[in-house]
Amino acid sequence: MKVRKIPMRTCVVTKEQLPKKDLLRIVRTPEGQVVIDEGGKKNGRGAYLKLDLETLAKAKKSKILERRLECSIDENTYEEIEEIIKKKRGEEE
Image (cartoon, rainbow, N blue to C red; front, top):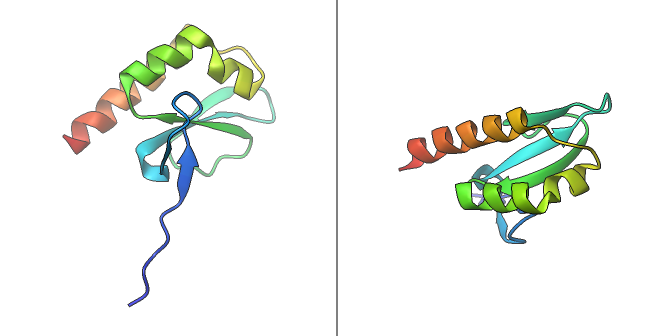
């Protein structure tokens, strides 16, 4: 039986290489909107974030997502990311 390759991506905050399913993709669409891409397929500039509230706090404090996506991110988007992280962490635990 053939072993499937697990896609790995790097978290923009921690610089850890993790399986794609353990990360959350944040995308700046060609129209300039910042959206959360749970499927990992949306068109646009993307940045991966580890599914961890501490990592999100560091990203917010250092504004690394804003630098990577080259646009400003409002507070509502950060709150939405936090809710998704809590939901996904709850499923795994």
